[in-house]
Length: 312
Image (tube, rainbow, N blue to C red; front, top):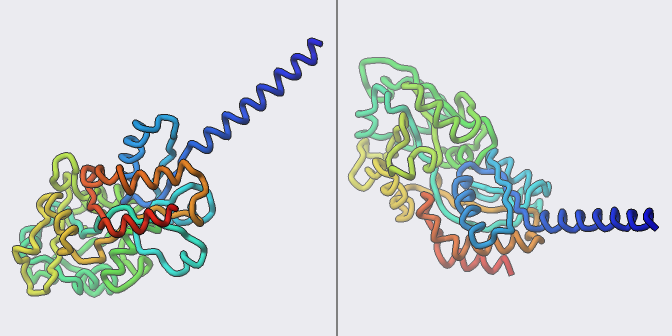
């Protein structure tokens, strides 16, 4: 009898443990991917758990390429993605919803010896392309018609990412066309260019600006884009001093698109797990009130309505 009772106790414990494990898995949402979306995903997870304490989150960065690969392989529930969805990704069965808007901006060190000239003059899309893709412009002094010479040190992303793909698209190429020293991740790229007075790079807005102060992060400066190509930064192009100014320019459509772009959650087909679907719905409804607070631009309500339809 004792052995039988012990056996039943062991079986019951195993079944209970199995049920608990299954429930925990169903209530855990895993995300990986774009650094651009990572801070907002963290903010959303924190706020969502206040209302849904049983839900757990596993969130990691790694770049948009990792987010897409992990989502398509089923390694995560949701990939965080930060460039337009390519046809080959659609052919593989990717499902997506748009969440918010941000932008990629050209960055330099605040110790760049030509900083004052660059902030007044800016650079055109063609000049950025000559630096990052053609490699035909290699010297700051030569570019700016200055008597002194200083080699331009170009930095890019080493990981497959939406920021690089978006920036390259604006310049007329693809990520693999971008020249420069490859640096992993948005935080690493920001740190690298901040430390090099001769450097130039590109960063997502959330990594170029400090959301708490609304100012550029220590060591970072932004090169204004001479959008109309007239050789000077006009008042309507001069919005880079504060994070609020940049976000307004993105929202108003003043900042070009690309490099302004929509950010997404992606998965292999429509998510099956109810906890995941509930969270996505929340991000598109109640969660939208945290978008501006986290340093992003809200998407149009008509688009939100369209994405909500995809959840039904």
